[in-house]
Length: 259
Image 1: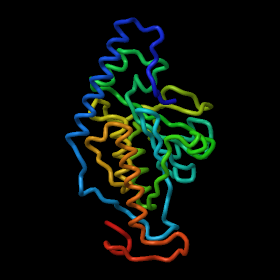
Image 2: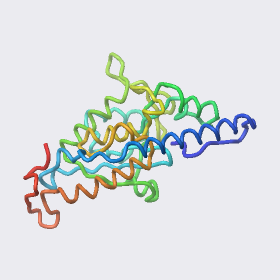
Image 3: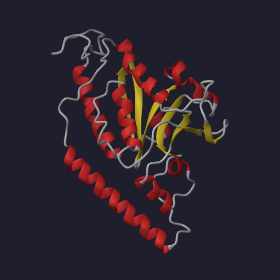
């Protein structure tokens, strides 16, 4: 599962010092980036559904520093259905992207952490099979449900699939894990570095589905969650239909939402 803390057991005093200093530098960098970027005013929802029938739910989950995206089994489609052959059967599947060595490490050392933060490194995709809805699986902690249109979901799935590396036979490269386990790692596209983190990846995936997200400077999990919460509130304002009656109303941008 995702690493939400760093294990110090077995580390030398020098390694512990490097780890503390590295984490401090990372925090300072992220805070400076957050202060410099501010908020972009031109980010808007796309692919808004015109009826309740066209709504699809995805889930954003946070594990400390890391964020992921969860889709239901029914929504995997031909784009992502292949993951079911590599993990236990589930009702939902979580997708995450991260630095290859750090993400797969049983115990994170100072050298692994510093390498992940300050170098350009290969990446992996992580898939977790969930037997129950995300809120139940994670005891309601760090889970946000977000609605997309069918069109938005198709764009999101296309980008999720593009994050995996495939061979000439269109098969993925399974790494750590086993078919009878709850999670599996796969070889992934793109490189991980301090300006291209797992949280930026999450923002990019959500933006592809029409969610208004900053994909340049969203480096922390907190930034992802803040934007997702804001997008969720904006979505409710922009809906062109009412769930209670099934009727529709016209908003300022007209029926169907933004292009």
